[in-house]
Length: 532
Ligand code: GLN
Image (cartoon, rainbow, N blue to C red; front, side):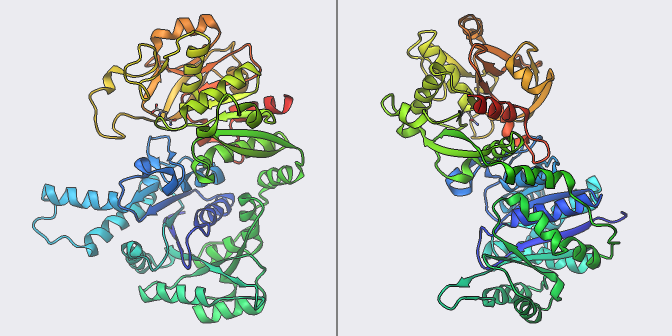
């Protein structure tokens, strides 16, 4: 395809309607037709990236292979499309302004007055086109965070208006709204949608396609009404009903020919409808799995979004093991030696979650000790792996004061420590090891049996490392360092081979598990949990 096509996805009426899932589903359908597709997200907040955001504010921080701390929607894009995203796929208002202000300070604007239009909007447009220009994608889908009508969204909408004008048929706007159901009147209401479209029109954007999120089926009359009031044709009114799994959404969109409508509007040939065979197989397996595997998630945030990628990786791995993942949040702040048995005894496997800071850390040690001494399949991720090492040092090596330097600066048994070269950096985020690093796996290990290869690349997001000074002692007592970074010699994976499944990874395998390529460690962990 000669020219890149741009699809903008905006949202109205309310937030959390699932723009990320709709963007991913559109991407999936176009990709299935043989087009190269990428998806990017613009977040209208002032933070440079979500790296410093509290998960309560914005859910999990996702990490790309190139080490960008990103919005969790990028996780959906990767899981649906099986692609890898980069820093260019997630832009915030903060980054846009920073670039413009840096340029201004350098004198690049030659004395001009810097304004939202055209300087901020030009920078937004540059970032939209960057992916298309640089990597020659057939389609770039751009999801605009927030809701139409927010003050923060205005510069983005103005940029879309301009781009639609400049690009003509090569740009298209999909607007996602909500159709509430009034139980008393037994009626679906389209007024909020009409208002939201008016809001878009008032900034000069006519949406091309409307996706209506609804809890009840939309009838033809209702679609006709929306089409009439909003200046779109009937086939461009698509419904998005609540689904038992988000991975159903591409199929529901395909049934309503959303992809065909897009292609038609952009002047592209329709061709044959792709069968989405592997995707359907995955969904069938998911629906047919009735038996559950119970997994305890030991962490300090008891909200879904904080561990989004872990939840998805677990449920994907469960599907491929023909089980339903029944995941229980276990708040590590409340775990003690007295209640740990009650909390964990019914779990087939336990995940020790990643995290930062002291809060809830002692409960993680309690959980690990229980799992280690009761041979429960246990998977420690990042801080979870560090806690596995600390617990082992305390209760097996006998160092009662063992800790990570993150929690205790002064302990002589700093089995998790900061590396010498990081010590001078002071700004938050500056010292983090971020993105994909290589790791070599010991071929005699359990971990190797999962990966079935020696050389892997996995994504990191942490500041502290296993302290190699203690390595020999750990190994002698039974905790092996089975994954090593070949360049830095840093420990990437620990395991206790005498236990059924007790593995900790310094990296985050959950970020690279996708629907069609579930992660081998999660697959093997779930299998061990089932066998228990
Ligand atoms: N807090 C730990 C560190 O900085 C672990 C981080 C994490 O779990 N992502 O090393």
